[in-house]
Image 1: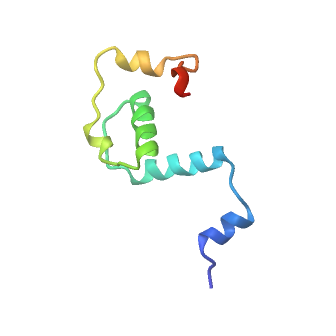
Image 2: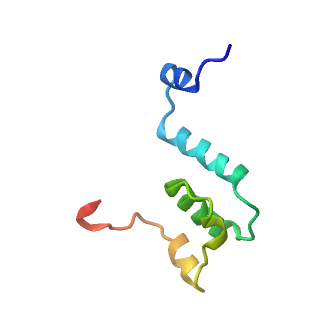
Length: 83
């Protein structure tokens, strides 16, 4: 008989990077077909990861030039006092 997943996770916990990798892999498998270029899909996939809302894969649009601004950041953005 299989144990519930929670038992194996408690016995061998995952670190944050492993959790994120599993989540993003699941999103890639379960997301509906899309036509996003790779860099835009990376943004949409993160949005789905943060919200668990797969409908974002069909309704997210990028303005011309904004993909380069958002995807090309080489630094951690300053979120002000709320970071």
